[in-house]
Image (cartoon, rainbow, N blue to C red; front, side):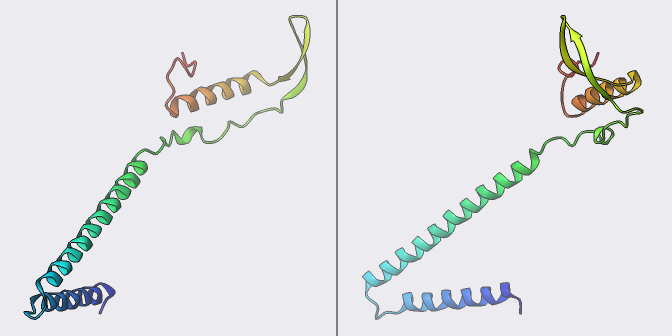
Length: 131
């Protein structure tokens, strides 16, 4: 016998005892009313918990539907460079600035990867500078 079946049997037994107790003629009317009010309170509490559970399940369902887009599998790995970048100093407006020199084909691959990745994750052609 599964746990659900055992719980159902125990619940039926408890309801049967309660019905027998309420149906007894020797119990005063006030006691019957008190028992019925308690039973209604329990039903109300069960309804409150059911509503709370429904709200929690709805929130979980909605949050599962609101996941970020996965993006294209093509942009999950950086392109492999043909040559190692070289660090050095460049002159910009007559001022020395740190810079990195890469092969032009490597630079093109990195730019294409960056723009493609931007578009794959929901960016517009304008924001991704993809003309």
